[in-house]
Length: 99
Image 1 (cartoon, rainbow, N blue to C red):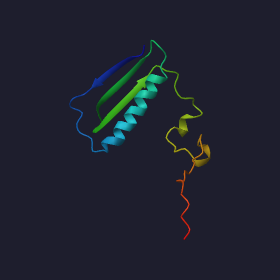
Image 2: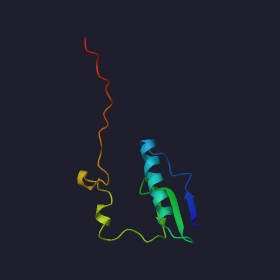
Image 3: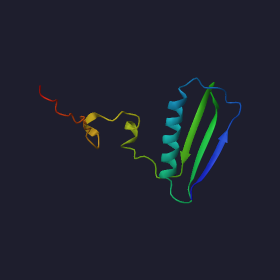
């Protein structure tokens, strides 16, 4: 089991952001933290105010990201790195009656 520890500062303030994007980012970070933390480990979630800005911090006791990959974490995947090619599905067309 992985223990999740949450510390939320109720006075952190509001954030002007796209709520769907924030939800997506938080879900990705939290699910990865839990996924890659071994049993008996922990995930810490902190929300607070720092230097006049709201800060969200997620830390875990998992192995972490290799130092070679770390500079590329926030890069968008390139087209040639996709794992599965996209396929175009065309609707089946019925033959038109000949007149």
